[in-house]
Length: 110
Length: 118
Image (tube, rainbow over all chains, first blue to last red; front, side, top):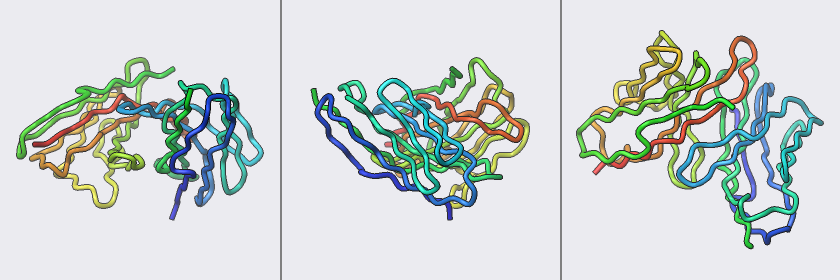
């Protein structure tokens, strides 16, 4: 069964304190791994797609990396506006469905 | 980027009534839309896949007679919660995929609809 596990469940950081969020996945052939940001009471906002191990994508203070078993979302020198829930999702080859993890609630303290 | 609009954003209804939620792709045609349900601090749970011009495909455990999905055009899908009960209270989110064919592309989400059933 395809599965996505994110850790930690919640993370509190001081402004400027870099860290990484983890997404472990089990899927029968990965078509794509996605990262989304979700603010309270809002729909998720697309951040990145990664397709193969070794791939990296960057956007402002965020960098996503991918291995054969997991993905990391690195956040460098975060700011309070980076506070949100970050969701990881995977799509298996030959499947329409995208399966989401439970997310990591990130809180950046000023 | 692709814009998906969802309406209403909040709805409160009495138990036993039906509620319709609309999902529109504003600047692209979406042959496939997805409906998710999200409980507080939980993941998005896929309810059904909606294909334009055909019947929706429901996930295991989702009652198709209770959650009616219609995808009558390339820009509009609707979810109707029939005979709603308090346990149906949740955050419902639609999404659409840009691109088609063999490559599925990313999902773009609506703003979500908070349903509260009294």
